Image (cartoon, rainbow, N blue to C red):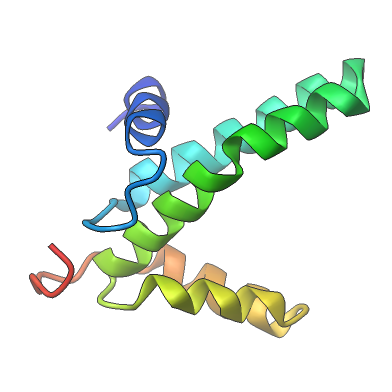
Length: 105
C-alpha cells in the first residue's frame, strides 16, 4: 500500500473500528497527519487545529484496526494516555508484525 492508497482507505473507513489495518496503512496515515498539521501550522495554527480535529476520528479508527492486526483490542490505545511509558508501549505494539489470527476480522 502506498501513501495515496493509505490516505484514501483511512478516509473511506473513517469511523470503521472493526477489521484490520496493516503497518503500511497506519504509518502512511500517521505521516499524512504529521505533515498536514505541520504544513498548515506554518500558515495558521487555526488551520492546523481544524485539520487535526478532522483527522482525529480516522486516526483513532486506523489505530484500532492496526491493534486488531496484532491481535490486541483497540481499547489498548488508552495506554497512550500514560505519559512517556504508555506512548512507548503503544508505539511498540503498532510497529509489530501482523498476526494471522482471524479474531478481529
